[in-house]
Length: 116
Ligand code: AMP
Ligand code: ZN
Image 1 (tube, protein in one colour):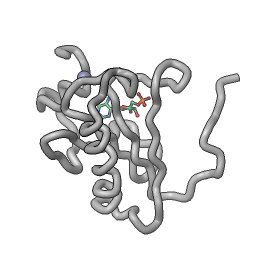
Image 2 (image 1 turned 90 degrees about the horizontal axis):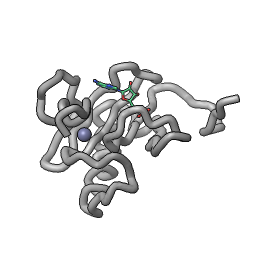
Image 3 (image 1 turned 30 degrees about the vertical axis):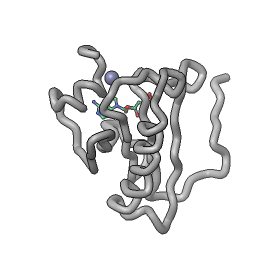
């Protein structure tokens, strides 16, 4: 996908602060962090969202990277929240599947905030 911003990051066409990478996935700091630790993990291959024919090994690679990212960022013990915004109602703004890893500060109990 030539115009997809996360494909451009995967191809190293635009900069990102990479946290880890392997054959399947890349993790990088979110450009507008919502917590002291806010990392995005993306598959190198373009899939719009979880419903876009994502191979099982890609899903596995994405989630195997989660605790690795947490360890690198020093939040393995303190904990972190893992979020996938999928589609319109979830406010997915970049149509390239990505996993948010958020931590570094205690979060509120509720996971969901609704639009009025
Ligand atoms: P979502 O709302 O789940 O689609 O999240 C998209 C996330 O991508 C947001 O948290 C943005 O801040 C982040 N983002 C957008 N463009 C970039 C970029 N070039 N580098 C890093 N993060 C980005
Ligand atoms: Zn893409």
